[in-house]
Image (cartoon, rainbow, N blue to C red; front, side, top):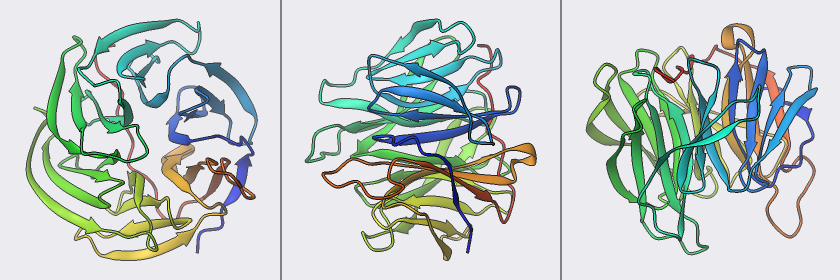
Length: 286
């Protein structure tokens, strides 16, 4: 069992996207609906917070140290050092949707998906690829809540979940061309096991999924076998992220939406990881 402890009692409405910045020695996370991004040191100190006018679905680091953001239904660039925010690209998302989970892929492009933001979800979400020249390419659709994005250590398998499927799919990924093929069902979940929210991969090619409905972090072998389950001290963990020197720590965000938030809901947790994580690339050309 992994011994999680509270790193920061943030009380996020929807904490997401724990992303380690090895240059700044900071763990960035977002509160989707605050909306805000926080920079947290590994001693729990909140180094900085930035507020936004639209939901922050996710973000990635760029080569220059800026953040590329999924902001509402658009994509933006944000400089944490200067506080400068600029629009980068748009999408054709309807008003009932917003952008959600995203990461920079091994090819140096930003990948992200959208979701139906209404209580009763319809499969209206789209999965996108964003290039440094501002081109936005729709790769596939039919998603209720796009989530769970992660890549295998060799960059040749992409994992993606639909939290309201609730399913996880795997794709063959070309780390040079950024092309997807060979879609297959990796896992089908339920409420008790944990609907799949955010995901991450470790160096043993295992996939970690936040079981948002079960208070669990689930670890899957490359063949989709559920090999271990780890309780997180909150009702609804949302996303794991490896952090710290050598990516040997494991952070988990959580949410606190609901009439009766409990202890730990919305907080940020951390533990020593049983295995190191796979580094997440920076977006090339920005």
